Picture 1 (spheres, helix red, strand yellow):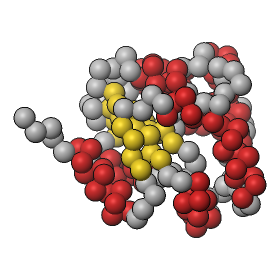
Picture 2 (cartoon, rainbow, N blue to C red; picture 1 turned 45 degrees about the horizontal axis):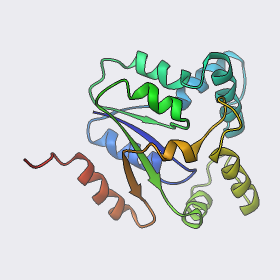
Picture 3 (tube, rainbow, N blue to C red; picture 1 turned 90 degrees about the vertical axis):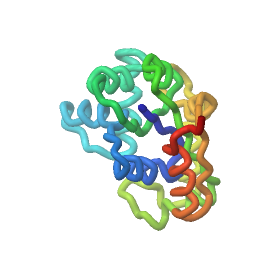
Picture 4 (cartoon, helix red, strand yellow; picture 1 turned 30 degrees about the horizontal axis):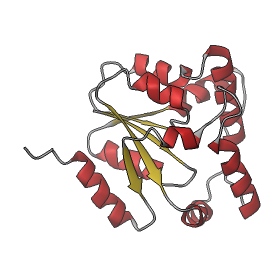
Length: 182
């Protein structure tokens, strides 16, 4: 099974990836393709450059390029989790695999703001207005090279609400991997 993850900043996507890795999945990210691109250009890897680099790659090679690169590089993987899916075209490229499922990890803006403040990751906004402005700029793409989190979330096969504690999230994830009953 291949799972793809989408969701807004600090929704808990990395926590879901880590849990899936602990349960036998291999992890990769659409951002890995962007990181490689930025390294070849000698650019610093930070949130702003990742967003700009993703737009640049999509503009040059099509809106699905990041997912296509990962799909082709990982074609033999049985259990894969792909983080940072941010456009409908990336979802469609990955759906060429019949075992692909898109998960949206969803949490309220206030919960995500509190998580973001407590994690202290480099490049995270330090004030509410910047946090909201960054988020709003990622929700709807101005063109095929931009991020479109709203349209991507609408394609989710599975939605995990992550407004509570880690135990609640773990319960949701355990249900995700539970074999279907006959």
